[in-house]
Image 1 (spheres, rainbow, N blue to C red):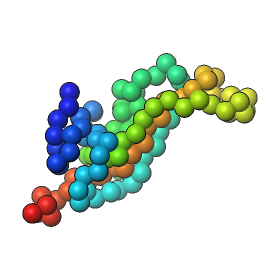
Image 2: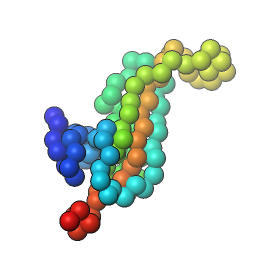
Image 3: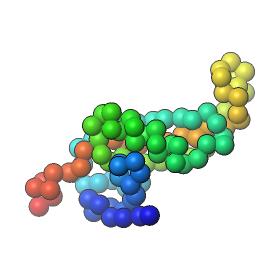
Length: 104
C-alpha cells in the first residue's frame, strides 16, 4: 500500500521506504544495485535484498528506485552460473531521511 513520506509517494517494505522520486535534501549514503539470477523471482525478493543492504549501510530510504528484468547475454549463460535467460534487478540511492530542520 502506498503512502507519502518526506514529501513524496512511495511504499514501505521491510522497514525501508522505497520511492521512485527524489526526496528533497535527503542525505545520500550509497548507491545500491542487486541482481537475482532467476526469472521466476519477484519484486518482493528484490526489495528484501535491497532493504537488507540499505539497513547494513544505515539507510532507511531508497530513492530513485528502479527495478525490472533484463535478458542475459549468450556469453553470460555460457560462462557464468546464470541458468535462466533473465534476471531481476533493483537499484537506487540508499539515503538517510532529510533533517526536518533543513526543510524549513
